[in-house]
Amino acid sequence: MKQAAVTLYGFGLSLTAVGRLLGSCAQSVMQWVCAYGDRNCPKPEVEPMPIIEIDEMWHYLQRKTNRVWI
Image (cartoon, rainbow, N blue to C red; front, side, top):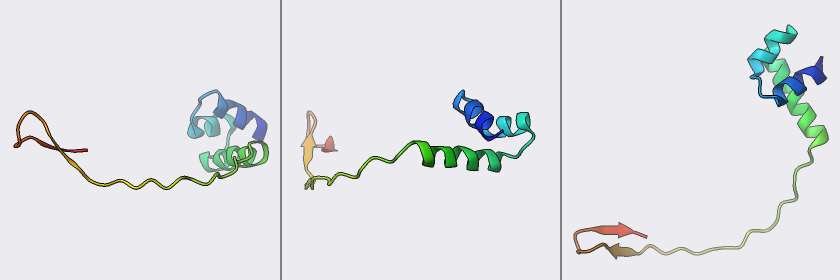
């Protein structure tokens, strides 16, 4: 039943619809889908992110009364 729930959810049915079809509740289906994802889909390694420094700047469009943030 758990495998059927994961398959139906993978085909695009909502958690509630899968639960109704299989005679279970949506929370159980969500737990089964999450457990399947944890077992079979490893999380990617976290790479260090570069640090970017951003400063605020004004830009005028056509006249000085039209200030726009960049």
